[in-house]
Image (cartoon, rainbow, N blue to C red):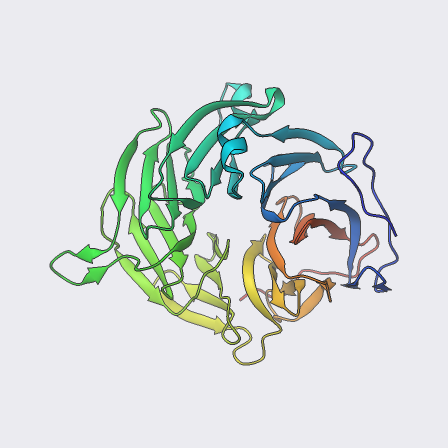
Length: 361
């Protein structure tokens, strides 16, 4: 079997589902592979465009590649002189998607962070960097926009969360640890993931190496609350607003996937406890019915039914761990990305699938 390369005529590859490949992977359940891309450099992050028509990857050499979902064709490659000089990895990618924005050109902007300290706004059709923020101390690992796309939060190596006004691109707040007269709050180590609540313009969640998820109001410098336990080492925090449930994935041997009630910050389910088959780098809600998880140890990306918490399919027995994942948020079981070292796997529900919606938590 041949992998898709980064050429203009990239096309879909088809595989027999549920069959172990000599290229070291196993496709399971009601999932099939729609395409494989060899990105030639290790992949550090990935993201679908909100319209689901294209997806992007951030690579170890600092470049960003954008592909057409329909046929995995390479559309754009983004890099500038700042990045060529440093050649350090892209750490996160987010697309600009302000609701009811009348300027259609804004939907062609992505924002990326780099371990070299850059946050760059790209107009990807013209391959132009239109704005750059540089913060050497932060060395950003993750960014998030609030639901109105008026604020952007960035987290990284220096334990702080920096909040920027999207219009002016200026820093307007710094959320950090400290003794604020009641207790010591905030992070004490690297912060690998930051997420805004999808239904709250100012509520922010962050997690990293210090085994806490901090809950912030982005207008206040100290955290409002925290959850102790999750050891976050990637894009492994997600919020499901219908039930107000928080999903966390931990890079460790036990209690890897956990579901929390945001009404009282209590643990609802410790999904695997001591029976985990992966150390998690990324996890996401898929609509209200499924959970998507990727990690290493067993080097797998799996989809779990939210009601039964049983796997309904996925990709496993890869040569390398799954370092990042994403979904296009289209349909109840959407198209998926799983990235393992230099290879990107585009996954989809098998035609004539037996998957059915189940009872929710």
